[in-house]
Length: 52
Image (cartoon, rainbow, N blue to C red; front, side, top):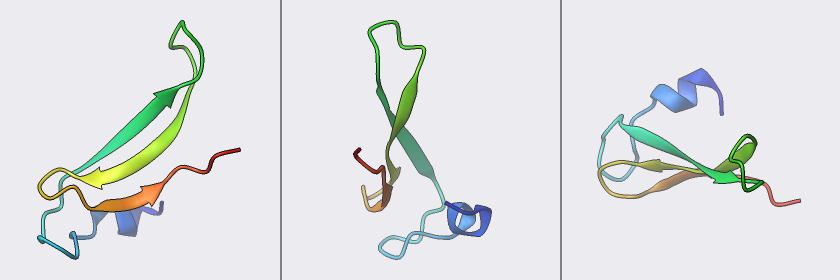
């Protein structure tokens, strides 16, 4: 996700607050991959991670 997209307002509620959720790969939590980026206010999903 580019910086302009990260700073953009949510198309549903207009909020700029976002949370990047991660999925931990191993049990030691040293490595992770992007799960999704969601709006804090309404839960709109901006981007989902790619499953390999």
